[in-house]
Image (cartoon, rainbow over all chains, first blue to last red):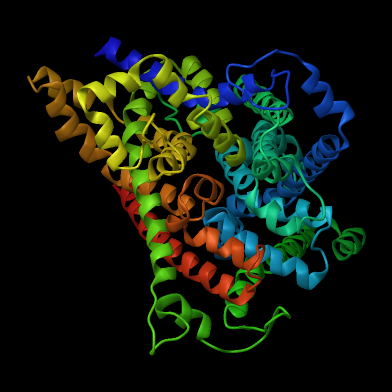
Length: 265
Length: 326
């Protein structure tokens, strides 16, 4: 059973890694077509993706703008909601948190269509700022969860102690609540960042083909056939994801964020 | 914010709770407005537009007609002529999503169970790997499987070079593969096919399945199954009578969530499914952004998808709260 278990886990990892490895290896192709295993390996595609081909460099900078903007905005909205939920537990705060999670819970194509209509009426369709807001709306459920987990981990005795020693709510917030939730806030930020980078369907509807992010550019190219440059994008995104989640695991408690039992170590 | 600041200047120390209340009031007001505008209005727009009417060659106009829904369920020419094309598309949405989500949960369950028995530090490494693959965009994953399943490179080529194709022909299974559409006369052929669609969709949600099952499984008490084992129950009996019943609800909840997520999946279906097996999500796309330019009908389809998803989510929520109550 032990050996069987290890084999099963290794097999799962293999299948999980297979398509990703294939895409990444395809980036090394020398020619214009994707082959696996790569033919005539070269690193020239990396130059094209990051430096010389405006189609990809534009898409990359759009992706970065949308992802960082959305992550910041999502944190700014999610923080007060999570804080109200934790400090008051009122019905209104629960309703706010529920509404905030709604866009993430429904099939993405529905919220994509809805936001597409919304921006076409408010004049934001095809502007990059509306893409930023749309992703923040879609993904704010994630920091909402991580920040709530962080707030719940605060020992209320600390707050009582602070209050006894004469700290106002504002001071207690700054000296007790904020420092203890920073790792969770950063985790939430990174979750939005990574998912926004990789999100496709919502940005597809709200961009209205006026600009393209990397995922949009790849989807457009799916029809015209693959080029190895697309695979460089995949490598880049994968690297970013692994770095981000490793950082979360290194400086935060990833198993706890994912809901593992605290009593077991 | 300015109101709160003004009060801050004039207020004296004992009145701070009042100031806190106002600040909270402003906060509540702002947040409520934000949520209503961005989380409710888009859905309302979809619902309202679904009652609109398409104008030939000129987009669509506001209206209140049930034509779009009638068209979805029985076709536009009803009662003279009945077509179930759109219902059939919804059926394929369900069909693909159900099989793929069940498959993902069934394979993710033993994996997650094994994962939770590892040391905490090792778990973190696995979680990084799982999360990295979870966040990979649908377009990358479809691209990867597209290369893997393509005829010139990837698995069919591997089948031929390694002699597996010849072996399949020798034992007679090749004909079976041809019958279910997974082979052409010369070699195996994996796409476009239901197999490729379901495989990719299942792959897409597999990391989600692990992440969703992880909390429930990591809270399982190992002493229970150990006790059963000491009392002489076989490993299979323990799994069947102790482990599975205690995670039945999260298991069903996870399957439902994945199912809802897959209902709207677009890229894998549009790339891998044959034209006669396209789903509602693809139809929504082609009505709103694609060639049809029939936003009201696309919205009606989105509403129906939304209703289907809500019903499933509701049951999922019910199961989850039941699970937590125990």
